[in-house]
Image (tube, rainbow, N blue to C red):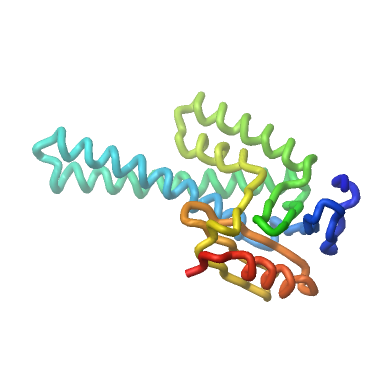
Length: 206
């Protein structure tokens, strides 16, 4: 089945894969933004922790003055990262026409979540330009925004899923592995079917 044949209703295709499309309004929901922000936040936390340990080893007067200086710098950095992320998200949403259009492919082994080809191509170009701009200006947060935007596809293997969270009012099912969280969207009419299918194929749920 080609992409042009994929509709908003769930279809069982000849290859045994369930496929459907979902369009998420980027201006009415901030879930995508917060997902990107959390990824950036934990990247920066890791970098900051390493820098903090290095300073603690290098400087005898690390505590309390240098520690407080580092913490203030970190706070300002997070604020700056948030502002840049908001602006980047708004620009991204405008370029994408206000919608995040995704195709889901689900079979007995797992589920794949990917942007439609036209949007994926745009996202990769935006990500590349953002990373170059960040590298040229020396802004790690801008590079991080570009890295986050470059991911247009995520596959989750059911055997590795540890937790599932269902939000019927949001048409959202979170399928979580240890280090990755996939977000599955579906129409209200198909929600229970998709949720039950995923749950029945995840053998290692906590």
